[in-house]
Amino acid sequence: MTDSIGKVCILGGGTWGTALAKIVLMNQKQMNWFIRRDDQIEGFYKLGHNPNYLTNVKFNLAQITFYSNIEKAIKESDTIIIAIPSPFVKQYFRRIWSSTFRDKFMVSALKGIIPNDNMVMSEFLASNYKIPTENIGVISGPCHAEEVALERLSFLTVASSDQNKATLLSEAITSRLLKVRLSNDVVGIELAAVLKNIYAIAAGICQGLQYGDNFQAVLMSNCAREMEHFLEGVVPLERNITEQHYLGDMLVTGYSQFSRNRTLGTMIGKGYSVKTAQLEMEMVTEGYYGAKCIHELNSRFRVNMPIAWTVYQVLYEKLPPQTAINKLIEFF
Image 1 (cartoon, rainbow, N blue to C red):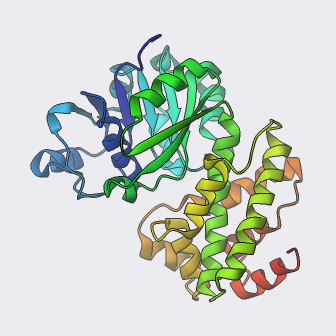
Image 2 (image 1 turned 30 degrees about the vertical axis):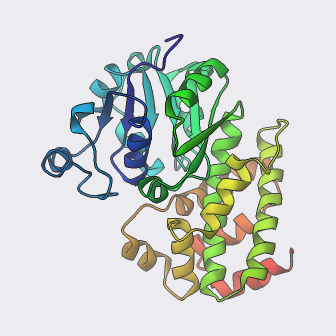
């Protein structure tokens, strides 16, 4: 694959996977799509759309080859875009041989980190499947799936150590609805995507506690500073934290009505227990898992992270939200 991204495969049939499929098919004539459940695939054929997520997005099914076997889907494709929630990655990948990934361009669209391993997807692929770094990329940025479905202008960044592959992918998905930038900060962008979910929970908690816009602005500015310090400590690299894949993604996740993580935080701020809020949402909130992973990861790097620490205490140590925010304000 030197002058083309080849056949694209989306792994994952959730909200984000569905939005990515829409993005890919804006330019590509054909696409492979791994969806675990056969009944969900049957629903596509009956309805012409995902029966469970973003049901207003219609697809031309003649353009899609569905697979319920993940290994076969990968073998039949060239560029693999991974849109599986991070808590389920190991479950999905455990039966795949390393040879299956040979010569594939593996692109992480995860917005989380692998629980217990405390690895972002690029690290997980390199460590467990010996995939060369030049065959690994990441897609990230301020791009809510719901706004893609509504055909609102969105923005993504494609990052890879191989800028040729990143360029080819960016050209393949750029459209009237999507603008794409390039970067080489693969791990930094992945970690930023984890952090922004944690910070969105913090913003939601404050919303639930009825703090106003003035406080939210101060909170977000401190989140940006904390993100910058953490990235510098973990992945030293010259970067501009105001880029769309750092600050932009953090802001949209912290403020948007479509943000699951903000919604989780808002419910907790209003008095819901963490478990009750999760059960009512019935969706994976990456920030919940990310808060624990970042806390454990930071035990090695010891970066001062009062906001991430506060969210961890609320989620895992049952610190009352109002008490937690009162303590946090002392750092501002």
